[in-house]
Image (cartoon, rainbow, N blue to C red; front, side, top):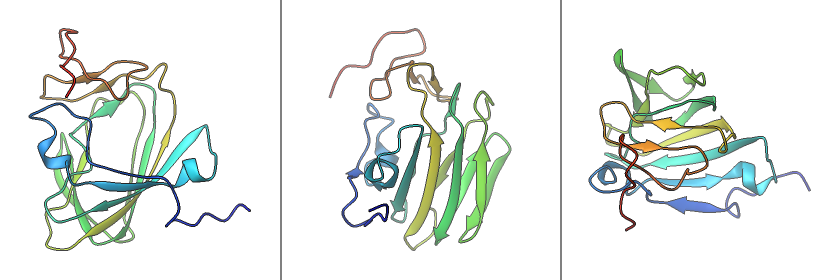
Length: 155
């Protein structure tokens, strides 16, 4: 059956960022809806961000597009241009290769729900984190290195 029971979809929480970059993302939670449907060319995740929680560190992808849609609550979209509040019904997209890093921060007092859709090109994609000594090299979506290539120690 193609219908996805979101309550039964694979879920995750926390972050794989090395300290000190992990702190604002430790409490994030998401359901991997695309995985539940067996999708392989793009991912779809439902993020639950409690007050004070970030979706990620500010980042951009070399080979992966991203799209977000706010389902409930509000989040602060942080980019090079500054901060823009997104509320339920607002959407944003991030083109692969555009070095304008982005992240979502829940600065409100209520939970936010955000649908995220992204292409999957882990063998090619480098994720860059502007302003941080942090990089995720191609094929290493769960391992991080310093900008000079030295790996962060495993936790």
